[in-house]
Amino acid sequence: MATSLPHFESPAISGLNATSLPVEMPFERLRDSYGRAITDLRLSVTDRCNYRCIYCRTGTDGAQYTDLPIADYAHMLRVFVSLGIEKIRLTGGEPLLREGLLDLIREAADLRPAFAPDTKLDIALTTNGHLLAGLAKPLREAGLQRITVSMDAVDAETFTSITRVPGSFQRVRDGIRAAQDAGLGPVKVNCVLMRGFNDSQIEAFAEFSRTEGVIVRFIEFMPLEEHSEAPGHRAWAPETVVRMDEIVERLNAVRTLVELPPNHISETARRFTFDDGIGEIGIIAPVSRPFCGHCSRIRLTSDGKIRTCLFSQTDHDFAGLMSHGTCDDDLRIWIRRIIQRKEARHHIGEPGFLKPSRSMVHIGG
Ligand code: SAM
Image (cartoon, rainbow, N blue to C red; front, side, top):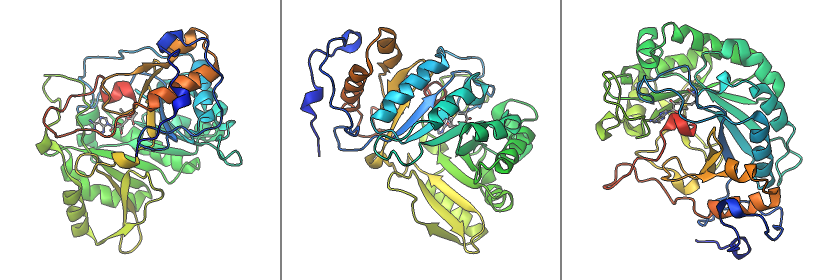
């Protein structure tokens, strides 16, 4: 059902000229035109990455967008939190490359959700884990609560063939263990499966979850890669996707799976354990079982653009508006208008599907 917010539709607001606007009524939760509450912000703090994963990056192109000063991200966070954002996930590029990250986490940890001021903001981070062993403790001390480590194989050789960085498997595994020791457990380990490349790893990942005490989450491959003709590069095709049904069937052959209830309504993963209760597996199936109906997310890129969907064709220049000295009340009005245009759903696999205007690494996954 479409919800209209007429008092946010002032014709005076148009991009960078939003200067003389009525003061917005504060403390109304951010909602899109489909009534979905927007509570979850993915913030990319750098466009740089130290891995060149073959399904994500060309291997030759580096960062394409600028990073903003940490103080700007902190300001943007405060505005978003005043609108009802309750969960923040810091990402990139590779967020652990970003100088000032700990300062940003400290600032975020001081904020309180506008609609639940007695609770803490949920602060999480997604990393490739390469620098995590040395940073896990400072991250925890700064106020980070949860961490997700991307890891697409548990076989060291296969892992290196994906990241194109020698010795990366040991680094990431040590990072995961350091995160657990620092109190950031249970660590989530995300694996994007690609048929004929790392789908042989499904059973070994089940074992990894059970022995390492991590939550392994298999993710269906989405058409979000940088474009490349380079050898070894994995371009998206429907046949490359390893779908949820197949993953469940193969895990069940290892040991009987038992489904767990979702943690909350906008949970993207179907959760499972095994019949002895040891290990946890999540399956995130945006291709075979899209979950857009419960989407509560928006994204902010490293150069300060708001994206309302991973598959958006456009973005919205928050940093530009801020740099013109727009006051926070006007920024809030502008954000509400943008959120009204949030896409209903993605169209992966449908005729006429258009790839988004940025690839995953330049949006922030
Ligand atoms: N560097 C950090 C990391 O490796 O986690 C954060 C950025 S990375 C782009 C975020 C996540 O996006 C990773 O878990 C990665 O596997 C995932 N990802 C990248 N391309 C993807 C695609 N085409 N489909 C599904 N997930 C993808």
